[in-house]
Image (cartoon, rainbow, N blue to C red; front, side, top):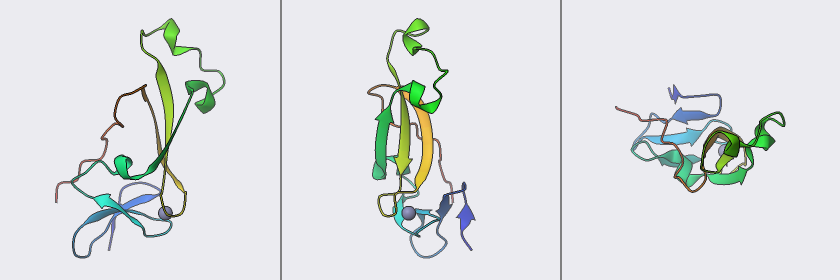
Length: 97
Ligand SMILES: [Zn+2]
């Protein structure tokens, strides 16, 4: 039985453990890596997430971006984040098995 991480992510329970797409069972990355680095990332303005978001430059000195991460096999949107433009994706899932 797989360990469910979110609506679209799970950890496989067979052999080498991987973070896997729940929609198509594609192994995205091993559990010791930031799976977002192995997805297809689309970067857009924070207004894309919500048109009512104001320009982040009013509050911070750096440009902010809205990122969407997709399964490289079936294109299901796996996760989103808001981050500083140019920074690596947030490593928000650390698995200790
Ligand atoms: Zn998939």
